[in-house]
Image 1 (tube, rainbow, N blue to C red):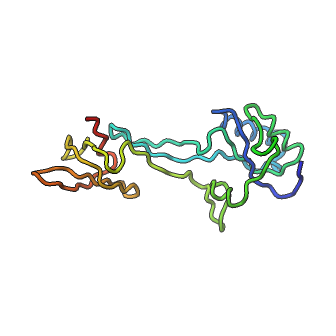
Image 2 (spheres, rainbow, N blue to C red):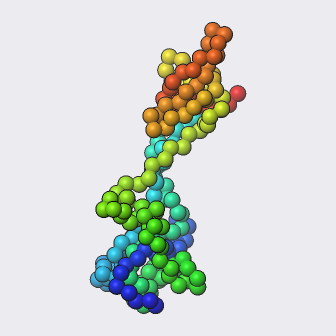
Image 3 (tube, helix red, strand yellow):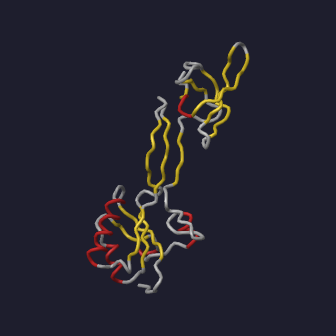
Length: 188
C-alpha cells in the first residue's frame, strides 16, 4: 500500500442503500481504534431537490448525488485500507483491482468535499428544483384568481420562483406571471 503523509479523498463503493450505514460504522471504527490521523473525514455527497407535485405541493428532499458511493479522506496504509475495506456493506475502493485511486483536487472541489480559495464549498448541499412540467407544456392553474384556466408554459424562472403562462383570454393570448407551485401539468 502506498504510504504518504498527505490525506487524499478516495471513493468507496457500497451496497445499494448502505451509504449511511457504511459511513456511520466507519466513523465508529475510526473513533474506537483511534485512527483519526489516518482516516480524517467521511462524506456522502447530497443535494437538496425541491419537488413541485401536480397538486402544487412543494417538498424539499435530500438525495444522494452518487448512490452506492461514500467519499473517505484518508492516508492509505495497510491498517487504514483494511479498516475501510472490511466495513460491513463496503464492496471495495474504486480503482483497478480494488487498489485505491485518489481523487484529484479539482474532482474533490467539484464534488463539494474540498475547499477552494479558503471557501468551504461543502458547507451546504447543492440545491435543484424538479417540476412536473416544462416550457411548451399545457398546464392548468390550480391556485389564485385564475384558478382552472388552462394555458401553455412560455418560460420558467426558477431562481425567482416564477413561471410565465400564456392564457387565451377574451380572444387574445395573454402572458401571466405565476409562482411555480400555482400550476400543474394539464392531463387533458
